[in-house]
Image (cartoon, rainbow, N blue to C red; front, side, top):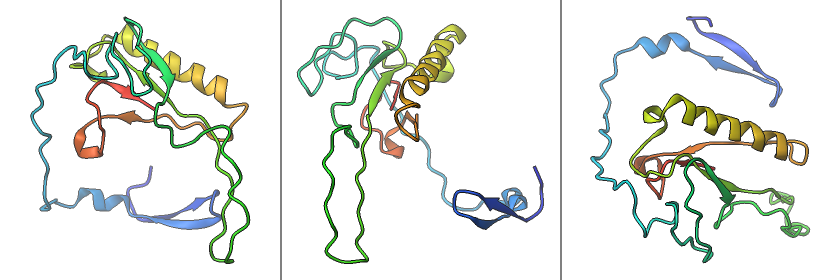
Length: 163
């Protein structure tokens, strides 16, 4: 890409956006955060993402040995959400938001992350992502997969997983 400032067209918004790529070369004197030291056990029977553990909905996870996919116990979207109804004010317009939220554990161990997994294990994760997109894509206009990692980023569970 270009190393100088330029305008880039955003077709979703129908507008031009300033990109100043050259600013990435400036020295950084701001605050740097070190990731917290974590002593994560390989398996924690009280962790709801570990094999054989009980989740919030009462279900017990299978003793999985690879990836494990399940419906999120606390989904941000639900497929059968009701319509919000008419707005009381023109500045407060609402529309229905429906979808599904899934969780996928990458690995049965809690003390491993994607970069430390075997290539064959990472391929299994990526293949499952592709299956999800193929399954959900025809029904939903957007399928977003993101990794949950690190307390600093708001992740509530250290077990390697995505949503």
